[in-house]
Length: 139
Length: 141
Image (cartoon, rainbow over all chains, first blue to last red; front, top):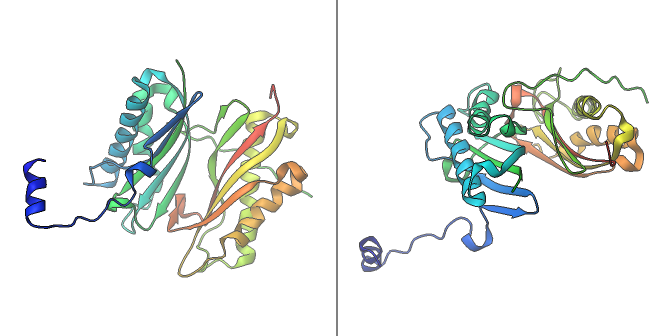
């Protein structure tokens, strides 16, 4: 138990449980030659484009963790990109492009994908941008 | 049934029109062009139904562009239709029926599909409706 945990116990603080029980949610599922990555968002919320790039980076981090190397991504089949809040830019596509371009920058043509872009009221953790993906993998 | 299939627009940059995995074809989402407004706001149910029809035409256009002929379509597997919705509007399925009815009209039983219809705060280009589609193709398509 580290210092912060001891302090929490001393103060008898009861922290709220995570929104989703960790054991009931996988960050990714891999089977056969598919990798399905659950929705992620980045920590950068300074502006929508930065948040888009951060979400793309977070997605790539999970792909690398799942596969060991991004070289094993054969192609990105599809993505869904969510953009939150009434303050979202008029062009949702501009923000979504920040996500898509981040993926293509890392994977080249293999990163090109079909996508759906949605404006929503709010995202978990008040994130500005979130995304998920289905990827085809190779050995 | 007389349907005008528009020329598909070409997605730019990092987005592609379609991706295949085995017999499944994932089509890039399309918006209902030539319509503006939101369900529960400026758009009534009839207009939304027609916007759904137009949206189906857009996706059929993309499908034709990808596979060349509808004869390569084994079945429409899944469609998700998102409707830009204002206030307490909750009749997204009715709005999405315009979309689904075109698919069953064109393909018959092969066009019957699993579907989700959902309301959304905003959509690309402030379109009233957007849809994505997964199609199963025959072998060697």
